[in-house]
Image (cartoon, rainbow, N blue to C red; front, top):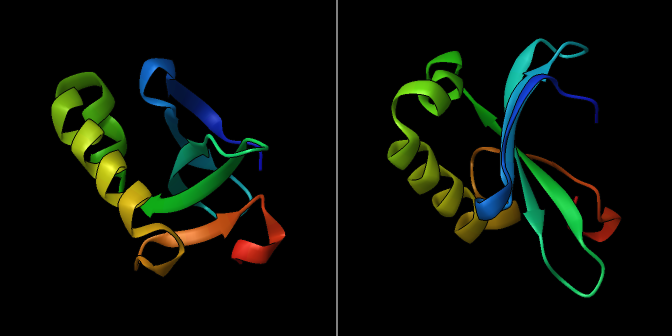
Length: 84
């Protein structure tokens, strides 16, 4: 997936950006498993803007999405096909 206007938080293994194809904002989380892969979660434009104003809230949201994984209501897609 190619996110536009991507903002990367490398030390927390996530980024936020805009998916122009589907017209939605996404949180991309890198899952450090045997072979690293990304999972994508739906976020709002307001949550995307937290990167510049509420980093702690965005960190918490990323943690919640990571913990809920493919079973969370925000889950969209995983680069690991058996997780979709």
